[in-house]
Length: 141
Image 1 (cartoon, rainbow, N blue to C red):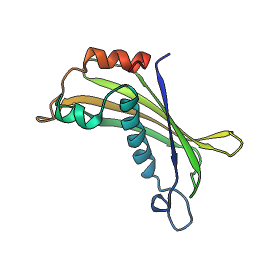
Image 2 (cartoon, rainbow, N blue to C red):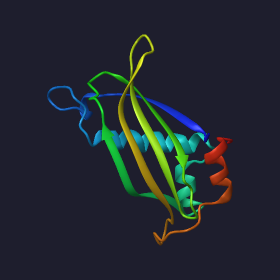
Image 3 (cartoon, rainbow, N blue to C red):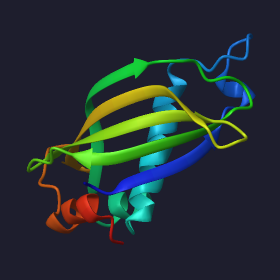
């Protein structure tokens, strides 16, 4: 099994509608935040990777399913792992859970996002560094 990363978040007022329900697009923001923390957990500073290694990952495909709504003030847990790595692309699987005060978790959302590794300056596909692929699998930093 590939390395699974967990990021915790909370639903703030600016992410909700007047009824206190989180907007559907906010799930993508949570996933993006989790992905930055995922890279950090593997020893990659996102800005350093962009500016010094001239490397970015861009989303090219997304399949998302909303199971239940998130509400204002709730605590969330976003899990993610990599799969189906190819030369220039990787799929990231995400699950977003509501975490109850007693520790119970309820699945709210699932998403599979295909990311392509690109040259940051030219925005052209490039190979994912082998070291990075290995970290995606075993989680070593």
